Length: 213
Image 1 (cartoon, rainbow, N blue to C red):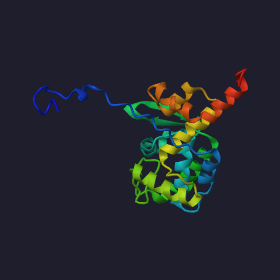
Image 2: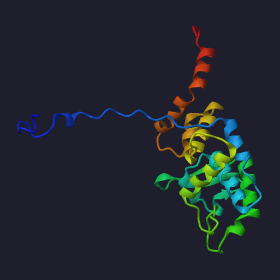
Image 3: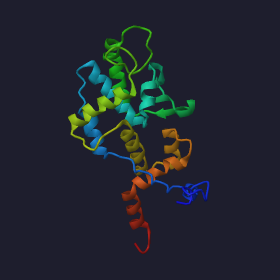
Image 4: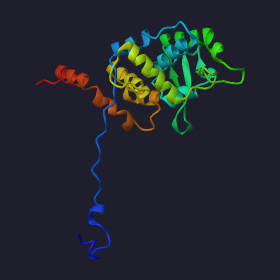
């Protein structure tokens, strides 16, 4: 009103900071849901072998969708059992890879990638049916296919697999700093959101440890 009548030049309300929106808790799957999703991806066709390797690796390493599609064939070190990841800000990190994911990637490379490749000039690890590097939208679309197939509900996304990776590590007793490095977070404060997700574990620890619990 005062501004409309020319008494003040600026709305005083503009100087009041907007209330901070609370962080949205990430969607984390149960370990049984992850197993149902991955184990029900068939391995009969090149695309199925690719998808099994793609999502096994996504969960095994907690990778962002962008990081998954940026992987090249040479990013996987089978001897060292690790993957070289080019993360945000052009920061490189090395993430361990479990046996299930390594087997899935190995099967894909041996039995499927050559069938998808359009030529010798594409170094991408994960190829589309036209022989080009997968896009992040391809990853999301294929995940929705297997989400329905496994009857895992809740709007599953590649980031949900990343959240599940971190949450399950935390539940298993992994150090928060180690999880930070594996995820490629610049600050541990970003990783701390997972301590809110794992409220059941915290309540259990409280019940075991507090003398008046």
